[in-house]
Structures are given as C-alpha cells and as structure tokens.
Image (cartoon, rainbow, N blue to C red; front, side, top):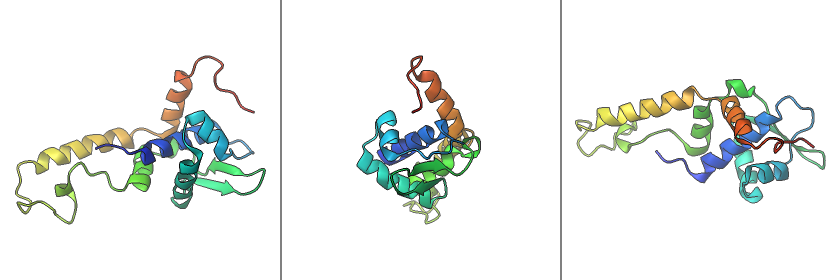
Length: 147
C-alpha cells in the first residue's frame, strides 16, 4: 500500500491542527501550509474533504481558519486515510467485488489479507495525537512557536 500525497498532506494538516487543539482562534490555511510544507492551493482541497468527513470545522473571513472537531487522541489514522484515499486494500482480490481472476481460489488471498490486517493494526492504534507528539519531538528546540 502506498499513501499518496493526498493522504500524506491531509495527515500533516491534521497534525498541525492537533498542535493547536483547544485554542480559541482557528488556524489559517497559510499557517498550516507553511509549517507543514504543503502547497496551500492543494491543502485547501484537502481541508474541504477533511471538513466533509467530520474531522475539522472551518470558519470564513479574516479571522477564520480551521480547527479539529474531535480530540486528536481519539482520531485514528485509519479513519483519515480511508476518508482521503478510500479503503485500505493492498490487492484487488480482497475487494468485495472479487476481482480475482481465479474466483477467490488464489493462493495469495490469505497473504494479502494478512498484509491488510497488519497495516490496519498499525493505523488503528496510531492517533493524530501520537503523530503530533512525534512531530513535536522531531522539531529542533524552539522551532515550534505560536503566534
């Protein structure tokens, strides 16, 4: 499974919003883009998807911006990836549509199911708060500041 820039940038945006979770003022797109090194025009599209998926709220206007709706400790990475990328499926043969040329009698099916389960286990047990903590720890001392 390869996560596209859509999933990567969407998670980065949520990490940035997790750093500011609970603040009164929403975070502007330009701040998210600059801190997480994401193109702002693409970020806007992702923020729309994240809002429609129920992860963030957006406020328009000069004092507007974006904020997490849910506690980042309860927001699993699986939910985010599936909202942005679709179902986590390392092989088409695991899809309910059964695209297996052998009609489901393939020797690989169990292996791909185990791969999917391992991926889901990692993503289900990782939250946006976990990633925000890792992001904070990876920053040089004093590099993270709030305006």
